[in-house]
Image (cartoon, rainbow, N blue to C red):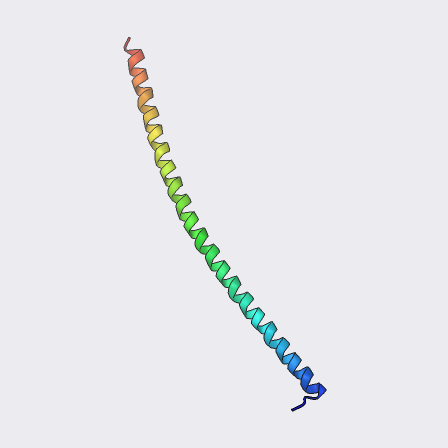
Length: 81
């Protein structure tokens, strides 16, 4: 079976449309996957950073309490002499 020129150009157009559609679909899916993974990583890192900040806040509060106690001891020790 021989194809004439319009049939050849139609097949070329169909092939190009299918290839372009496939590339568009793959690009869209890849973009969604990358966005989902970056959101997951962002959530994980945010949770870890929040945990570190909470721990540092607790340490800072304890240091502040120790500073107050040390100041009170120093005042009591030097005023008692």
